[in-house]
Image 1 (cartoon, helix red, strand yellow):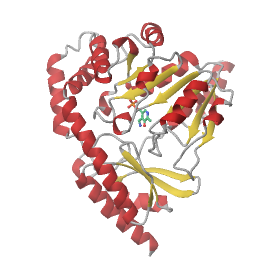
Image 2: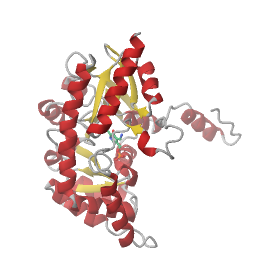
Image 3: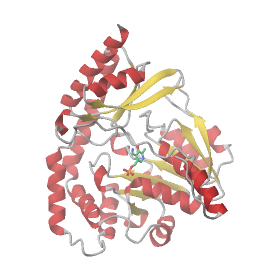
Image 4: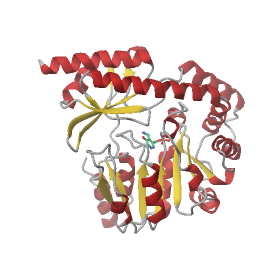
Amino acid sequence: MNYHYRGSEWLRHRLSELSRLEGYTRPERLQGSQNQPESILRMDTNENLALPLEFVRAVMYEVVEDVDPRLYPEQQDELRSRIASYLGLSKDNIVIGDGSDQLIDLALVAFGYGHKSITLRPTFTFYRDRCLMHGIEVEEVMLNDNDGFSFSSDAIVKSGADICYICSPNNPTGNQFPRDTMLDVIERFDGLIMVDEAYAEFAGYSLKDLAVKRDNLMIFRTFSKAFGLAGARVGYAIACKEMMDIFNRVIQYPYAVSSISINAAISILKRLEQVKRVIEGVKAEREWLYRELGMLGLKAFRSDANFILFDVDEHEGVYRRLKEEGILVRRIGQIGGYRGCLRVTVGTREMNERFLNALGRACYNLQQ
Ligand code: PMP
């Protein structure tokens, strides 16, 4: 859209600069999903579809009873303490935010100006989008598709960049990078390192314990994935006390997260054992789905998250056919030598079976 503003030159210039950016493309939604929500499978945005809706709703009802929305939120510190005990850290190592998106963005606002940043490709596109929005130069290191999506720490360390963002497990490839590679980057990179661990609960390890000891490492986590609260918008960052003190006092807004959302996160943490059982179920289901994708003759990639990337070649056609059957997955497209990749969220066995059956039909029909 062209912006026709007749005001000052600088504002016109800035608006035209911004209007050229791509911004976030919202995932497609299907008509009629309001009336028959159960017939539509939204396997495209990596929420925790295996956490029963009744369970999360019960949490929300309890919260609504407890909260006085006339008042500004005051439970921030309680949530920070609860997150800290969940992670075995101190509350002083935690800042909460309006989704981890907001915290990633705020880190760029606070530290990015005039600096160069580096990340991997493909990765969570939000990071690059926000860098471009803030006028921060961003270099991308291509993941090596011959080798389970790896990267060389030298490419990052020797880039001369000041800020490094690594998503691990990586969205959309699903793999968590080896701890040794991460430790090597963290040891040698001269600048701020942001590690996005949105999917850590489904993965093998976390760098949280290191983040509290280093002065240049920030970890970003969220309640949107494993904890099933994507709609509540609660994320948090983990770093050393000095960094988090500045973040809490100066960088973060006074009331970034609503009292309902803060209380929802507190409540869900009180039910940690139930959530953990569901997470274990998703991990088992992920292995099953991975094998089944292979049995369909497709190249699927091992995942440490709650989604799987797979190559179908003609991804637009397969995407369309799945959509016709009420199943939404994410179109990723070409990654290196893999010509047409899709990404699917791991759901319950019932959802996964419905998805696999539809996928089998879509691939078969396209071959005819
Ligand atoms: N990081 C990654 C890697 C993600 O995939 C997402 C959501 N798609 C987010 C962060 C955003 O998390 P939140 O809902 O906490 O803003």
